[in-house]
Length: 116
Image (cartoon, rainbow, N blue to C red; front, side, top):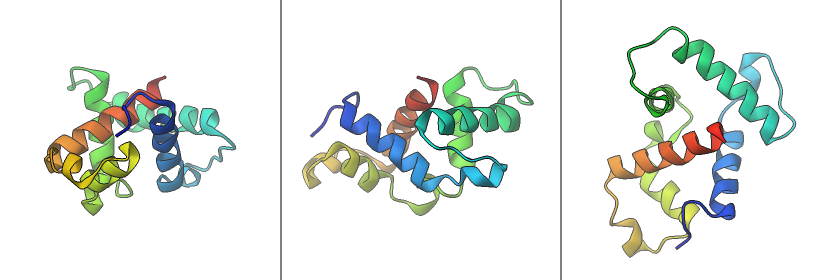
């Protein structure tokens, strides 16, 4: 099992976002992670954070975004397997997470990468 802050896991989170989120629907293109992150953070700010001051912290805004995004793990029910694959967990290790815990961990990992 890999630690959540290791370079491999961080790279997998980045690749997952770049592979699943269609950044081009914003009318922009990204050639690398830095550009992708900048564009996506701008989208999240413009669509969610700027007009909504009801959430208490930045994580809550990103969680709201992740739950609303149809291409992410909240929709397809794959949070436990996705997290397990990223962390290279055994079946026994995967079973320690509830579905909600896996969603929360993935949201935390995604938020952390987008804000770094």
